[in-house]
Image (cartoon, rainbow, N blue to C red):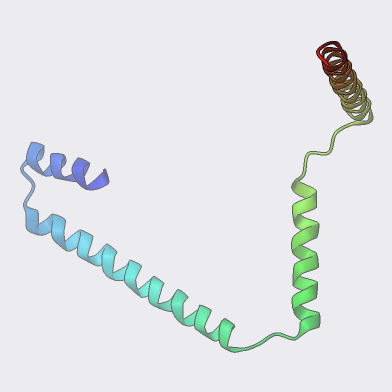
Length: 111
């Protein structure tokens, strides 16, 4: 998308393509250098094994940070959700009980 916009700028303002290409080449070179550095860092990190205790501490820190991001419901919300759940269970139980009784009656009538 960005290339299309730049191409339109070149066409609209009649900018020399060589100037445009030089700028994009420099950006691409910088990006490729950054990628190479990142790849080297990941190779170094993966080649050195961390002890079980260190990995466990990293895991615990991650869990702690994720639990801070959770939106915990209030007491009032929990009461509403609990009541709704119990009512839903009672409704489903009654529904299936009534269906079972109806099928039992139909079966006894046609026997």
